[in-house]
Length: 105
Image 1 (cartoon, one colour):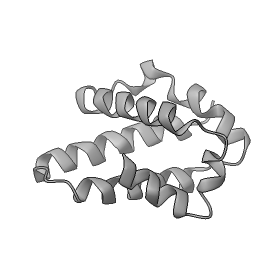
Image 2: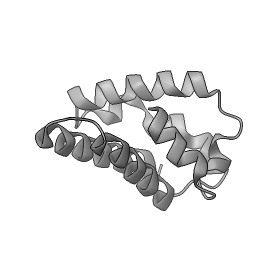
Image 3: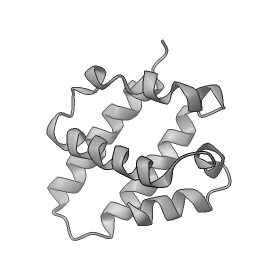
């Protein structure tokens, strides 16, 4: 998670969405989310991801930002010694989450 957040906070377009975020709490939320993501790739509707992210959407977060977040996350994942199948599963699950997060209400 540290590598991911390092990349995000260096990005001029993204860091504005993390200015008022408790980093420790956010890391915990993201870790929990990823654990769920690996277990239930199609079950994101039950997590109310759009609702959870609505405050940052009101501040300007858009689909292209989420795509960049996923890119950074996958960059951090590639640095870990994970099987390609696991990395592919993570990428697929994050794409499912992106669709849920960015869907119109």
